[in-house]
Amino acid sequence: MKKNSSGLFIVATPIGNLKDISERAKEAIFEADLVVCENPKHSLKLLNNLGIKKKLLSLHDYNETLIINKISKELSNKKIVLISDAGSPLISDPGFKLVRYCIDNNIYITSIPGSCSIIPALQLSGIPINEFSYLGFFPKSKNKMKFFINEIKNSIRTSVFFVSSNKLIDCLNFIKSEDLDRTISIAKELTKINENVLRGSHEQIISQITNQQILTKGEFVVVVEGKSIKKTENINLSIYNDTITMLLLKFSLTEVVEIVHKLIGINKNKIYKWVLKLKKYQN
Image 1 (tube, one colour):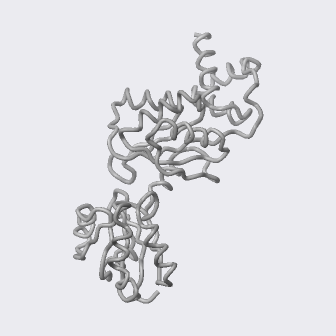
Image 2 (cartoon, helix red, strand yellow):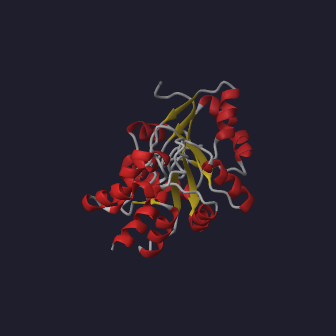
Image 3 (tube, helix red, strand yellow):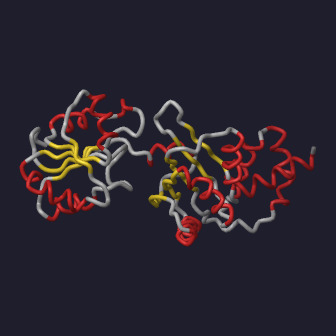
């Protein structure tokens, strides 16, 4: 890649910690003739931190065609950088039409990769991520919510999606109403000082949010365990009572749930409820 190449440079920016920007990303922004972004006020903070002054042009879903027409000539002979408010552009952010325009008009285009909240959320979830599906944002309407949850319910892959603060509790309650009995992880403030990851069943997550008084502001990344392909859900757990009792003498409740899950493949939430019931009966 030539230093002064013209065309479109898709540049990933930090999702929280400003130190997570790459040298290539800083170089691209420094050499850019124009920086296309979502919110100039937000992006200005990043550029000020980098000590870079550039012309900023706002691009969002409602003006993308207008912006393409405005910068079409510049794309052929100038270096245009595309950034989002945080993370990797085009991942549930505007820019797709701009990229298609460059491809269709044989304009040079490249990506400078970096931060993306999806990957760390998956890594920190404690849920298998050898296969996963990204589903975008949790929908607003109840009909779309039902379709959304059914897609997760029937998938053997781990699912990951975004949910806004005002929809987080709705999302968890809807999962509960649809009897989606899976392990869930919810990540917020990734890479920041207040980074927090909640893990467990939907009931445990709701309890953690309530009891720990976790602020439900901002955007959350939700990871949901995939459907088990093992045909073991109809097994009567009572046949394992003696084994579970012995395990409880040596291990914590959480550790016993994990051991039984790995041995027979039944959903952790179902095992948790059974082991908890058994433990209370013993006491």
